[in-house]
Length: 197
Image 1 (cartoon, rainbow, N blue to C red):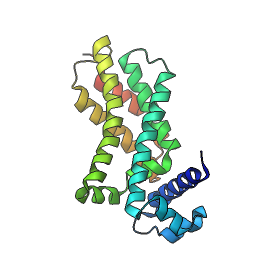
Image 2 (cartoon, rainbow, N blue to C red):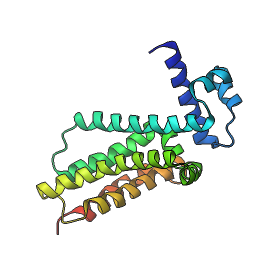
Image 3 (cartoon, one colour):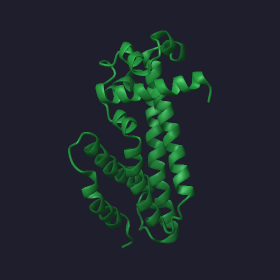
Image 4 (spheres, one colour):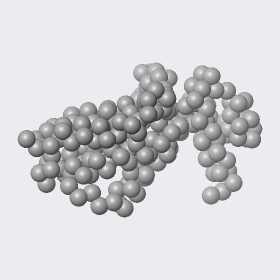
């Protein structure tokens, strides 16, 4: 990694943390400059605007989520589709802990306000959520093939399960409830929802 690319990565990491915790409007480029040691001109050299910086964070988040899931799934034997679903649920919660600031950022309202008027933000958010939901959907398809999952709609069931799991992540990120305390109940609910009749 070159010196400039290290600096760019440091700017992205610091901006992710600031935007996630303080919000977009309340984060100043001066604050980001102080945190990274990069001059404001350097920040604007890499990212032409604050909005472009936020967009770059979304793109980097999507790439990292896909890489993390691909690496994890390659190193784990899933067995049945239902077992694969349990693995996806568990790893999603683990990944949300590893990428705490990125997931907190994905739960911030300002991103969706940008998405209302800027197609590139909407497309990137949709791509992030689609890649996540597809992981759940793939497990359901596998379970339908091997008989470990009953006759359910793969897309709708994947969306419902994703929403439950992501809800636990929100509880944790906003310090509302200990997500770990609900893990076993979540897995049991998923099993009941998907098991064959």
